[in-house]
Image (tube, rainbow, N blue to C red):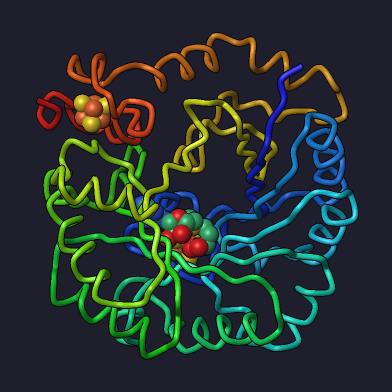
Length: 335
Ligand SMILES: C[S@@+](CC[C@H](N)C(=O)[O-])C[C@H]1O[C@@H](n2cnc3c(N)ncnc32)[C@H](O)[C@@H]1O
Ligand code: SF4
Ligand code: SF4
């Protein structure tokens, strides 16, 4: 029986933001939401398969009509439930109280901008004040709250301003990611080149070393694009995370129509168009035996370039997030 550690449930695709670089951009107009009773059946089946943690994601999960009821069901099943959110709904203290009562163990708030003007430019909404209020409301209520931030360009001045923003707003820790491609037949956002990401890590390290901010850096591109000395320091200081479950196959991503996605970034490309019937205990095993899943998993584990075959960093690097190599030639970067 295929077992999993963590499951991501796409409760809904709609969102109260519309971020320019959102990898799920082309699905945000989808009206469908997860049917509550079917989701409960899916939760039971995930529990049977060893899932210990469920992350509610979207779209924006806090606008899912059954947000509290589903969270409570998951928590009462003995599975840890957390939420990936833009944080805006937590500006309402009553919402925070209900979050706590529902047994939600943690909320990760993604910081979309550092001024209200920039927030609007990036997300087409004015949500910065709400997000900040949400962060502090959660913190004061004792709900575990973490933050994340996606670097989309190598503007040093802007990064300095971001660091000052964290200090001013008393946000003591942050998970830093670099932008990934929107996998879509209609790609709408041109992303930062990978070699620039590598070089910018040096600036991120040097700037954050001058602060008390506790940060973790998600490495989703080839480590060999990072200065070796800086890489060694980041490792020694325990600043690195490669939380991708795809090569290990330890996670499962389910969309609002109960289709299994290769990962959250494949919002438009489920393994199969037919929804999984979670009431059938053989359904997931049958899906994981299909050619589509086997081929995907083999591709995700492949060396993107010859140099990776003998590289001592392979286990931590994995050649970077493989979604990048669906859009670019790895040999142009890994030399
Ligand atoms: C799609 S969002 C869904 C949850 C919630 N609406 C939010 O914004 O946090 C999940 C996470 O993916 C991040 N994200 C979105 N587009 C991305 C991209 N192109 N590259 C890297 N991270 C991205 C968001 O910033 C957020 O942290
Ligand atoms: S808030 Fe989250 S789901 Fe909504 S558009 Fe932004 S990144 Fe995408
Ligand atoms: S595994 Fe490949 S991409 Fe990663 S550092 Fe080594 S050579 Fe570079």
